[in-house]
Image 1 (cartoon, rainbow, N blue to C red):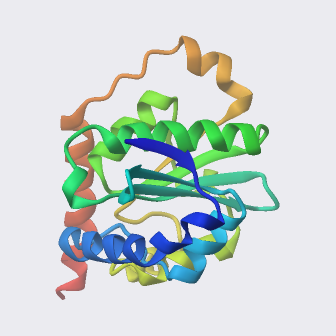
Image 2: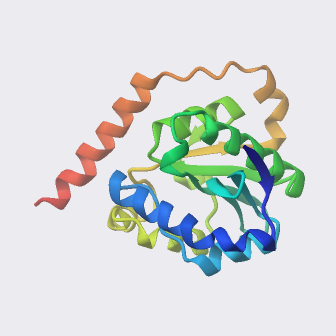
Image 3: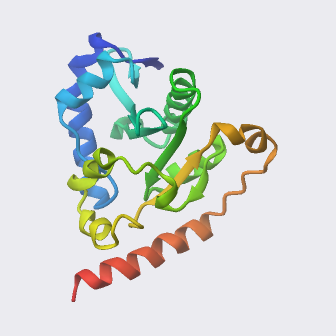
Length: 207
C-alpha cells in the first residue's frame, strides 16, 4: 500500500473515485457531496489531492480545496474503497493530506465539516477544534458545493448558520497551543450532538 500526492497520471482513477463517493453518500444518507470526474482530475493535475493505491488498485482518496483567496483550506472527499475499510487507511490518508495542506498553504486555516464520528476523531487528533459555521469561510463557492448533499435544505433554512455537519477548524496561528493541549475525544458527546441535530432538523422535514 502506498499513499502519494496525486498527479495527472492518476486521472484514470477519477471515475472509480466518484463512484465510491456516490455509493458512500447513498449508504450513509447524509454529509457527502458528490463530485464529477472532471473536478477530481483538476485536483490531481494541480497537486491538490492524495491517493492510496494497492499496486494498481484504488484504495482511497482525499483532496484539498482553497477558499477565501487562500485564507482557508479544506481536506474534502475523504473516501476509502469498501475492500480497504476498517484497516486504519482513512486515518493515514487524512494525516498525509493534512500535512500536504500545511506545506502548500502554511498560513491558511484548515477546516472540515462532517457528520462522520470517525472523521471528527481524526480531526481532533490532528488539532482541529469544533467551531460554529460563522468561523469558517464565507466563500459562497464552498457552500454551493453542498448542494448535492440531501440535507442542503437544512443549511439554507438556517441561513448557513448550522446543519447536520459539525464544523471543525485548525488554526496555524494557535499551533503551539494545539501541540500542548490534550485532544480529548468523547464519542458519546459527539454522538449525542449528532442525534440532537438530526432530531431538530429532520423532524421539521416531516411536517
